[in-house]
Image (tube, rainbow, N blue to C red):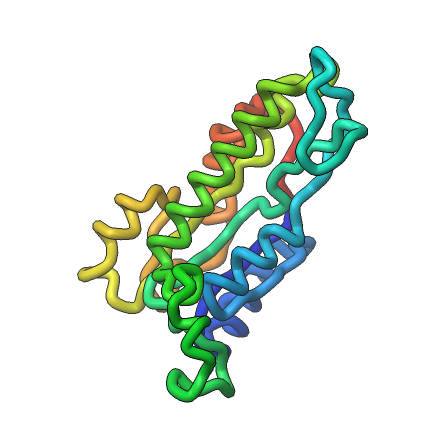
Length: 201
């Protein structure tokens, strides 16, 4: 499993990474501090699927029909993201960066953007895929998205409205088999995988 954790506080990134790793020991964990960094890592992690396009249509990424799809299986995002990394100050940075919407992205806004772009990519890929690739295989790349906040009483409704599959507070729930099974079953439903099909972990 490939997992992305987004939080502006280094201590939370380390603790949450450790907890997730204890629940999913074979997971590959990537971290990001800001919405912009998260989007860059999502783009870098995209998986390319080789498939000749139908009717002579060509992928925008390659003339050989290489389609891009999601590379992360689970993304955990803190709602109250800062717009700068640890070690940087909020002031004195390039003012042009402050006008970039990605630099000012909250966790819930980032979740909305991830879901929108993932659905758009999946729809585009499915519409141009061959029978051998199949829409069902493409749909397997939908990730689980988890919104998180230390101020859950204030942020829960916003995170749910953004499209989160789960909403966690801080500290997060116990990283045990029960939680793992909830995550796995939700991911399987999103990717339309039968109970006896490929496993997430």
